[in-house]
Image (cartoon, rainbow, N blue to C red; front, side, top):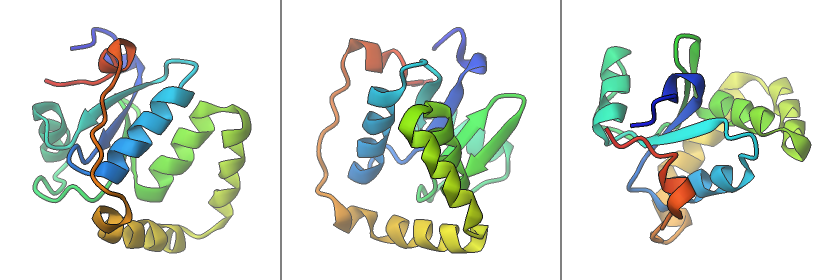
Length: 137
């Protein structure tokens, strides 16, 4: 496991979802500051994260962003924070904060419910550097 994982933002995602894996790869490519690590919700690390917070451990339809010892965000809030942390042009996504949370989460949930239909399952093969950013324990 990464020794410095507590200094990173950790993205928890559905490891069996093609759409989720696409977004993990999308973040990895744009993570120029090396701010993120990733863990599937199905992994031992992901299950521990969920159970410690009393969150659902069998349904994996929510993306979480966790900054250890500081906060965790979910759904649309997590996405907005990720884009802000990526910086550059992606910071413009902060404009999404003007949309009430119940509306942005409504659209998040709509995509989440249909994510398996939205993209064919494609195999994500990370390179060596990307593999070093995935927490497997």
